[in-house]
Image (cartoon, rainbow, N blue to C red; front, side, top):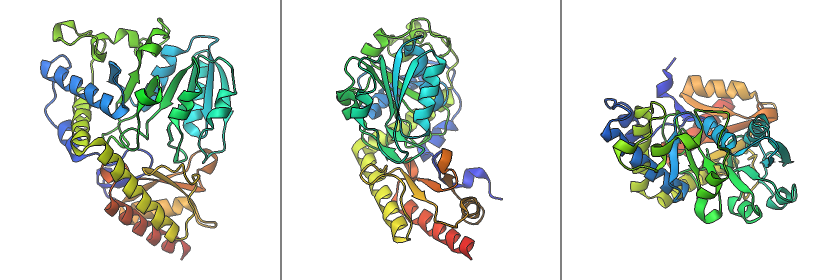
Length: 367
């Protein structure tokens, strides 16, 4: 069987990284306090501000995968008894609610049908004065985009936490303009970097209302000091942990590549590839899962045709075409496929490749 590194990855998990990110990852390692590395870290933080659409000085890549970004948001802001309203329209909204509960929050969930966007008015009506409102911008389990600016418009005094794991560098994201107080992401999707870091941003308003003694030492944002823009000189840097220097260098290279192309051009490239993929899937007679008008271009969900063995199709794609697509999530694990065109894969030729391979797999499985 072909090695995993040769796979064409079109699932909701890791994408094929940008070549620049892989070159940087393979470069000789720097020490985590080396001045050259600190310069790379500063550049990465600047790049993250650009892709988050923020001027927040506390913007950095946390040294863990995207789920730690989610954990960091809640462990730093939720104290026992705090009211947390969580909009749920998929798996990762559910995970937000579970983490908030574990940190003592009084969680109020606003459930939506999977495949539909979040309804801001229903979220606003859930509680008159919550401390936090939380929602997923681009729900990885369903391929649906929700309107963060509309949520921010009804948040009142609440802090808005946004999961931007699948949206960052794939679709428009403007945290400051939209009123997002805290956002976290992962590197392995549209940023085009191997998994291992959690891009994170928090504004001054949210930082001032944080829990000053969170239960996690590692994720305590108050301890990160010089890693989050509060010191610009090597001698003033706070030593908190040994940063993963190779991963940060990989992220910095990918961010430079994205910004050199132009962020809006990158969004447009994802939109073009996603539209082509979705058109071709429908021409094949397949039905898309996410609600029309709220479909993500970078992550397309498609219903498995009746009578077709989802696992058999995915296995054939992997073994015959070296192509990996994702199964559905939760109750839709065997009835939905998730196909990602993210980062380096967000190109028309990749859309044509995966649809041709999928057609062959369907023909084979149907006999």
